[in-house]
Length: 434
Image (cartoon, rainbow, N blue to C red):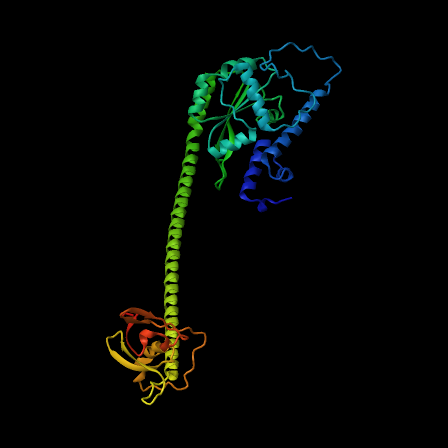
């Protein structure tokens, strides 16, 4: 068995309600019943009701003496579809909501749809709802075996004044017929001795205790026998006046707790929104930093690549310089042409080329010209691996305009416009700013 110390707050509350509703004083028995029904309060209470109802009907079925029972006089039945007496055998266990729905359906069939707002659920559920919502609970029990039941249902439970009063004060109403197991057990719990029976139940803080106690649902007034709606209203009004202030204090305390909870939730929401905003701001800042870092890295990588390419280009140009054919000597017996270059910077340069030099030799000369007067040694310069050189200028003849490509196979003597002399313009393809 679970000990009281091992129960959580929810289980303690269910234990307290179970003992209060079923009048079970034995703590161990109460815990065992709840454990048996997996702490389902309604099922545990319904099980108690079923057992007690079965025991009661068994006692009714046993003859008290050998004297024949007097004949049963005909009685008025408020619900045509309900038997006038409880069955001898124990009623089948049914869902409290089903029973409540049947009670409502039968009532409306006989008395119409104007009536008190009957709670659609079991007694324990109504009790728990009233406790949770800090409302008064009016319990109505009736018996088909009493002649006053029909008049009570027809005149009292359909009273518009009583309906309005209950609605105005938000009083919960649970009704049942004692032919049903649950209502029968409720009548036993509330010690009903006459029908119709009404009990006014409200949440009360036990008095006379040294320490604060948990509020409990307690019967604050009882009405037994036929009574009018006006009388019920007066009794309810008196109960509201006497016990309402305490309930109002509990409501104020609950409202205060709800307000504090909402404030905490609002503060948590505001904090979480602020946190999310800060996180989003930090995320964007981090992404911006990462983007800037990537851009800087790409820029540095591009600069390194540019420098590497420039160094490779310069190495290739030095290679060209080291392999450039010297200008033909005066005693050279082969074909020679004299080319006058106007460089991109406006400088004019004249040089002789052999007829069997490729046209690309013109480009090579212009490319290495700035290095020809340099004292830097070009010996032992090797051609860069995996490098394709691109000349950043074009050599053209102004008239007739002819563009000469850096062809390594076509010879100078094969171009009539270059023979025996020519004036060429070097057109740079690179902006001066670069």
